Length: 388
Image (cartoon, rainbow, N blue to C red):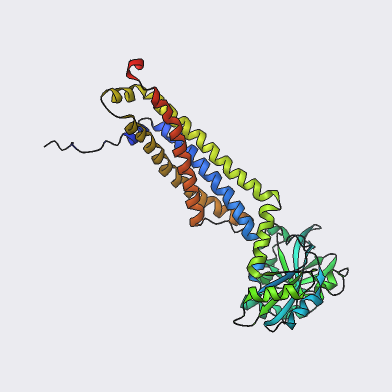
């Protein structure tokens, strides 16, 4: 019995590897398109996640803000008495008023200033879910003391390094003297390159023009077992329309939605992803079209021998599938490296997760399959009578 009977010839792979340079160009083009898509999606998702770096740490079930507050980079004030009114609900366990404003931080060793996010709160009242913050916040009862986010951009100065070395770190905020009394780890966002925490007393001293009785955020904690949605509806019906109430998750989603739809940044990253897809389609189509054209006499011969056109079309489809598989792996590896470099350089939460990897692979697969379908039109010209 002939051992070759019943064995399938890997024609698609043989056609691809016949010209190694063309295959390398194809994989480079697919890899470049994949890297471009990975980076655009990474920056976009990093933008959304970094926009709620602070909010996700709030020790709160509900959040109150002003209707004029479009996003975290433009918070407006509202009367603190509205937050106090929520204590009338039997399910409300406690509240925390918070000041939220961008201020000018002066570099300790240089005559330059840079905007930094300042949060003012009552040190004795729960604020973050971080259990270590309560101990660190005790020093904020002293006037002019702040906690500095050591994950802030380096342009603010080597504050973390100096503080850990035991040096006294002092500088100015809005031309008023302050001292760094501790460090926290929060991380920058697209809206703010750094964060400092302080008491409300220090905040109002640094920003004396703040309207009396005005705050930017109100945190509401509910009793154990309470339904946040039910309490939310009751409070919305009870309070005037000069404040907005969200669940904690709803507040974070509203912030993400602002960057997603209220600015051009999310749109730009989405367009960048589509451009990577288009570039990949052009590269793969050119490679497959050239491959089919170069081997058109061979395809015509196979047709004359009795091979069906559908079978030959399957060869081109398999070529596209192989290109997708071989092109995705280097793009994924390069994406991991670039994401690591971006995290180190910008300190933004740019990560490679399974959802992102699967999406890019499906985009590459669609790119290769679509290009293969377009290239297969050339097989319709594989008529032995015309070619020979």
